Length: 296
Image (cartoon, rainbow, N blue to C red; front, side, top):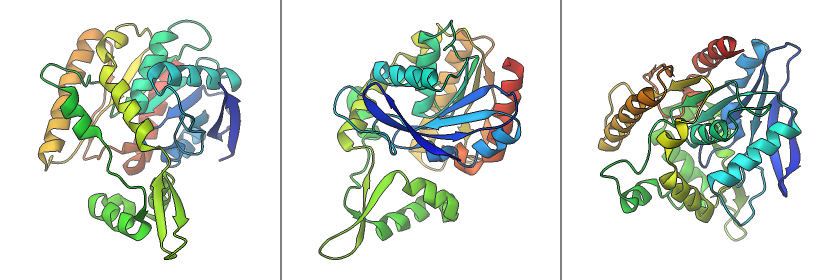
């Protein structure tokens, strides 16, 4: 799993690359908000085994990619992705986006619907099939729900305890390492206690949330020309009101997307949390591979 960098649009972009000797199409994996390329570490090897060349960049402001001031809207991220596709000489890649990464895949595919950059298909992994400003929603409510907790300066051990209580799969050491890659870990000069700070700054995070609020999913999706596979997650039994609301939001969004895209393929991932790439990597890879064969 080579880790490398490219200088694109004035910033240094970090990415992971899994190459194969096969002739499978290139696949670009896009992580979600406040995540990083390593969330695909458990999925990518299964795709490589099927003959695909796999690339996973850290988005601007995330992971090990530079974090400049400036615009963090979809225009910027689509230009970054176009520069990445061009620099890696990827001919009509398959785009796979998780969560916010799915919105980025939709935006890119709509803007590059023809030509060498145009994806031959996109896969939306528990994201990209809803619109935040749906009837009845308000910016104040969305901002409140999507504002991240202030984790900068939290002791590492406290964060690990919190993570274990809310996400049982984090007991897996490999998954824990992937999650911790979202943070810088440093030692307090006075106490010697290990502390964390998110790699995506709070200010940049909220800029992206504002862009998501303004993102017209259905209007943009209507411009898609490539095949689309949606893979929403469905928990065994949504226990909290927030989980029930999120599931209902996805169901409404998918219903609308199927009206816009009659050939939309939908595969519900049953008994899954939002982070499908970590909980069900093999099943997810098989769905992506099957879809890739159909759009080849």
